Image 1 (spheres, rainbow, N blue to C red):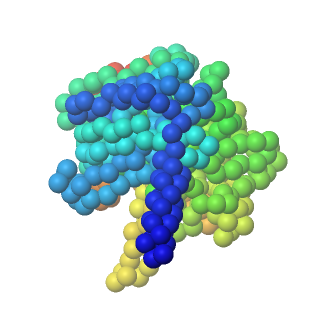
Image 2 (image 1 turned 30 degrees about the vertical axis):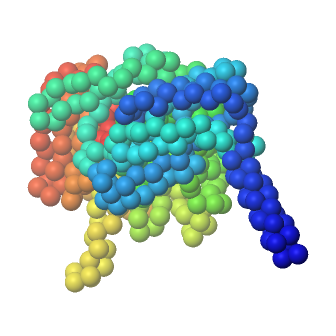
Length: 419
């Protein structure tokens, strides 16, 4: 009797184990063949063939790395969505992931919340560089954009990619992502997009009517405009924003379409967003979106006459000398305020007033890139020297001096520092 009872117990345990395994490892597709030989680099295209694929199947990665692969410590990233480049009834193509140390990557097919393993491959290191590089944006018409890497030591220009069919404006970097985010002008106006410098691919959003893009304190975010309201949002591929996200109601006379001329920036002390509104008659107004703590209110400053109004971050010391803390504060470039001279001015979000200019330059400034890795937040400025050309000058905040970079007649509409 005891032997019979033991047999039943063993059979029950075996049955429960089989059920558990089936629940954990469902079989959706058969005859799976994954191209997995050799070490792959981030952005390399891989293919898998299988029977039983569906158009709505998703591909996920389970990424694992050890401290022996160049990482400071072992780690993993699970549930990472793959960039799928092609689909058919019997096959899928996708890109090897970037942004992680050298890893072993398991490929998972997801269907209705459940996953099946399709195999594994090894992927080389794809972490973002430790220091930022300077990039120039060349608008080759409304529907194409050339991105170049610009060497600040030699002035050498190296083409990175041609975004065919994608315009890009308001270029901004999410530090550590090695991506350049922006907005699509032209027929695709209202979409967000980014180019991944590691994986060498471009991704865009659905038509979300994004009005502006910029930096929060730690990552990139978008402002989605709808009628007289603005919502903080993120592309699905970027980091998760706090929920619920803030919503601002714009005052009469101000629309979302007026706010996308330059990337917005954030002040740390107030948690406010600084934007610029193009009033359409040669005048621009500073616009500040305050945080939920301040009731999500919108403040508009006095208009100024200029060719452009460009927000930027600077450092401001807060507190007594012995406990002084440098925090990100805001400022604006008033470009060509008298037809030529550009002024760099601090801006006080509490009084909504410009301070006296701390730097000037005798030329229009088209774009500003802040070096957030520098101790004093040096400013890279794209300066117009002709109708269709410019040069880059750096305002070194500690020395309060301008330094020109080599290279003349640059065809850039914007510059951005990215890593």
